[in-house]
Image (cartoon, rainbow, N blue to C red):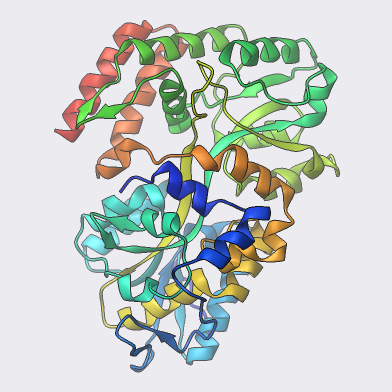
Length: 443
């Protein structure tokens, strides 16, 4: 087999707790699974009707993935394509674009009938791609493979299994334990008030240390929506945008205060934050588990991996559940001549135990099956176990993801928040404008 390059429904808290019970609870989840044990033979996965999926002749197909354009992930995924292709005697053609261009480029290709096969999708993009009406229902490929309930949920749109879950986690706070210790802290405080006090102490370390490398560029300012939720804004309720309420104004006012005091940095996006953190110039930043590999690899500190401290987001009131944004990838299949083979591949890639554990070991991306989560390699990873317990356990998808225009909504809100940060608008005026823009996009 050769590879030809062509260039580059909401989750419940209970479901997320079930999904991410990594560590001592994972074995228990595996024992209680109602979906059975995954079949590790990619050529003989049983369907719901008892027939063998993959009994038809295997055909060449394309696999789209932004990860193929990333240095760390490329050899891992290329190896997976090589293995499946060799087993089937077919060619898998990779298609890749940089992450920020990926969805637009792939949407154009799918809409124009220029792409068929399997594709990696961010869970936030599934509804947008599903709206094109060209994704296969993968329900029969999901049955009997041991996927967690929450994992399957992120691959569903209006009850249809349009994607098989590949990895799942959340975006939350990660701290450098060594820098915290320098100011006498051994953890990130649980209250907003104490968190703010910690940031001031960290600023006192000097040497250009950024206490919290929060997102301040428009491209990533959607992160502030989680802080709005922390302050009590629901963002959307019964189809009505609630940004512009007292809670969202209070959240943005607070964010502006951090900005003005130098407790968060200017012109920072996720990539900037990772770089600052890896160099020891930021004490806290927001990321998903996937960010760990790059941060550790780029750091001059050989011990940084042992200093990573996942932390629950501080809350406004005692008893509030910490907020975090659900994060993950699914594999979807576009209908076409080779859709059967592409569906088999999606199933194998996301549920074969050997494959998903090897993927975790290479890239640190948690599996989405009970067996994968119960594997020793996953359970023994303290960073993932802590991240899961402190962050992913209370993570939720964005309420805007159900709208195909969610990307435009995020941008409209982010532009208004940035206007506040740079002094071009007041929090109240900006949030009113954000509400108006977001409402127009979902109406």
